[in-house]
Length: 453
Image (cartoon, rainbow, N blue to C red):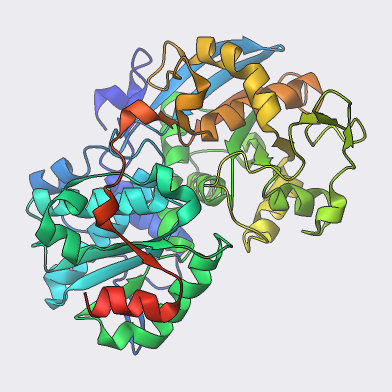
């Protein structure tokens, strides 16, 4: 293990390189069979990983994280687990995407078949996959014709889509199309993507990998637990982990990593941290399900106009006390309704403690100056003008933590770790070029774009 992982001065690590020897153990904890699936239209490259040689190390270089203490809030020690350090993405999707592409590389080397990764996305997942595929090409791990990525994103997330060589190089752009869904419901990209894969996989040269399976994201996120155990293992002071979530893949992966540590005798189940899920009013489904056992929005408290252009409620401390609009969408990245991951997350919170809280844009705006000062010494420094912020995950998480502490929802004496899963501003990237996107509205539009460009 490199000294940087253990150094209290830096508390930094590459979560994939530094814990590469633990990944097979993590894979065994997350999947029942690591072998490739090559059955008709259903395909997975399996979970075999390439040898960790220098080209692979170069490819995995952006998978860095930092553990940074932020001081105290409300009597709780506050720590940031910064997962945003890849400038090509600004989000935690880097880790899973690099591992997904590494697995595809190993499959291509073993079987000689090209692989096309297909992913519906709200933006960040697609950005990270495109970044990882480009890195694999530039590192010489594959040729451009051997590994492609097709991304299907809703038009509501257009402002988050990034330019890169996959969009500016004509040959790479043709091989790696970015499809923009123009329909009214953003989450329909999942249904359309699934239908395309089911109907047209056999027509794609080589293998089409529909990559949304939960296990594809759990494995990389186990390394969060390994990192914590190295730099700041949980002692007698209980801990709470907070995360802005849509489906909570990151927290589920963290807990699977804790399972591995506990099964291997490296950590005690008695020190397993509690979890705070943070969501927004557009998709509060996991908090609703946790609190009421249902995704029904009838579980939201009633908001009343206050006569000053705002809406307020005081009946339930787990929901915003003030909002500009009870139907607002704070960040379109968080777009998942009725996530299938809710039962698993509910069970973890029941066993190990925790809660859920929903935040509003008005609450985030009120906290913004305080959060900007808090994050100034970190690599997650916020733009002075909040209108330039494009990814609100970290601001949501910190606002949720502060609200939960202020409202007595966090048990006294707990340290708090905030998973910094995403934060970037308009100045951090170039927008995707208009001629680098293909508008689609149906499964057949997707087929036309992918199969008959």
